[in-house]
Image (cartoon, rainbow, N blue to C red):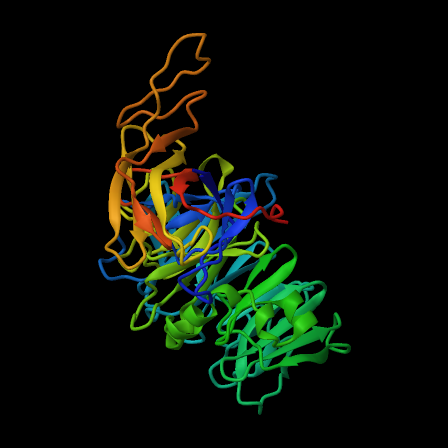
Length: 521
């Protein structure tokens, strides 16, 4: 009777069927090639999963019960005193606020609500734009005002080669504007100007990025186009067409990761480097593992409201998304680029309009999220709740046959290895062929041991953590038994303030016909 161990070899995929081949990776070692469901979780470096971190409210009082926090920026001003000053600024409802120790101060009022803001700093000045509807504003952390210099009503902008470049003006949506050198408050003086970027191609400028000494101009949202602008002065600015058929849906979806630009269009999530190499060859799209979900299960009419960040310290990116039928962003899509290929997961517990990376307490880079209820959420919290609300981590495997699918096998025992999380449980489910799923609660507490002979000291109760050698323990699954031809495993944990972190699963099965195969590469 072999004891079969498992290793998770892939992330969430919607492009593979409900059954996977039995990938034998060594002596009784089976690979799980993909996951059918990966919700509200993150991946650990050994390939397994952990319940995603929670989030707490930043501001003690909401700006308004139905206010959309549509944008957040961590604004640092160098100044002349030798000590940079931080001011966290956000757009909520119809106003601009600054935040300090959880208290918001109103700075600008009377804006149009529910716009898509963009922020950029140049010469210590924060320049704010609002979808081309409102006049751009500026802040030096003391004075908040209309941006000086008679700027156009642009929707987004980027600091590139000591000029501010901008686009998204409602009356000239394929026109690129630029300020004079070293001054984002002068848009009419000598050295300022504009360039029309393929104005009759059926698309508009949707995004800008300063990348590798060039300005990358994205057009969309219909057919899509990518154009590079080379040169450093108006006399040598040159538009170099790169691709037709791929563009971007908006400025907010574009992130930088690993020296590459990653962006969304209506087809997929793209890498600029991969696009340069392979063009519109679908398997090169970053979102290829979830291609059908991307095209069919997301609300494409709201792609203009996708907002992304690169959480570099954790090795993954996050994007807010609206699922089919939703009128607001009702989930976050995770893309973990530490793995090859990268792994996706879905966080349906989050309903947020915007994301930002903020240098938070203890100088820790932390993602912040803007809600639809006038609150800013501080993410990456150890407590597993979102503003005191519980959520469920859910990992579902494809069916595995453990040999010939026509042969019957019998489960004798199951065992899960976990990082102890106090006197709590998670649920393990197993479905044998078409039978009703069976479940058991599995304890994930540590083992109370003291003394030099054990060389560990473990606390085991509902509120305490785990110290020393109690970081990993195996738990048998009670009454896990039954006959099957193909078997599906699910692990879930949905209790308030309870973490969940499995690192292995073993199955004692009689009748399994595993053939020896090379280890995975």
